[in-house]
Image (cartoon, rainbow, N blue to C red; front, side, top):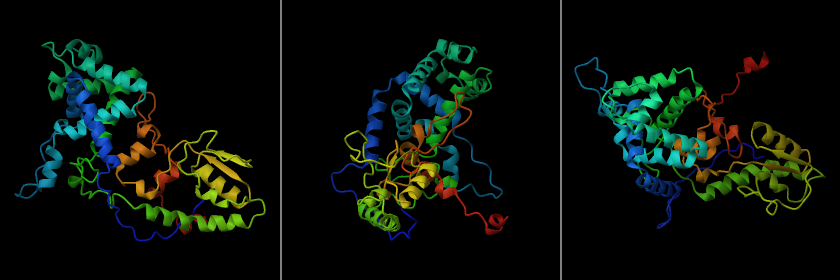
Length: 344
């Protein structure tokens, strides 16, 4: 397995003219899905967004001067009227949810667009034969709160699932179609956004080559290692594994999963001279493919696009689904154990 190396200076790689980036392709797909979504569903969806994330009055300042513009914008932004966000939300429902969850969400959105469906979901009559979108914000809030506190797990799961989907995307989506834009809430949180967007493939090759040297050298000293010892540095990376793409050879060890357990086991076994094959269901994302955007990472590197949760929706399960598993998504939050603790 590659060891940690000092990263060389990295430059941003421009996108070739006439080539659509992944972010642009996703934007175009989102717009297409938005146009095909029935108006009834969109009305219900916007009402739910407005309920969970309503525009608010900025807090009063201790001084006589008004709050800074970015703070005012943070509180007053009406996400339910942000078409880019709504299109991202529609895409998440149509593409990222499981078929069962997608079907249930669409049924709920349709029911909420009618007065009788709203009555069936919330078990309350708000008067005037009104649908959920026609309720006041206070009425909608009380209705969702009744779901969240219900003694029935399915009703709690509905409220928690909608909240997780709507609020999770709200703070991670970007408004620019090429992925280089910002989020309407970031300035108010003093978050400048990712440090860089895109690296070059040449940087990938440098990191791959530098990382493979210690592993290849170790393997080369073992009498039982095959001549193509560089395979421990992901020679077959990003391959679609089928019986025809796996090299026709005998392996001493086959490891399923490349996370903290499987990855370490593969490194130690390879260094000991065993021919080792690691099978990983997730994709390999080289540095040049990582945008540093939270929305992209959640979509591409997490189990079920980061939408995996317990049955009742009370517990969100953030699990890695990429080469390296949890070590690829959690490394930035790990601190070295202090020496005095280690001595204890």
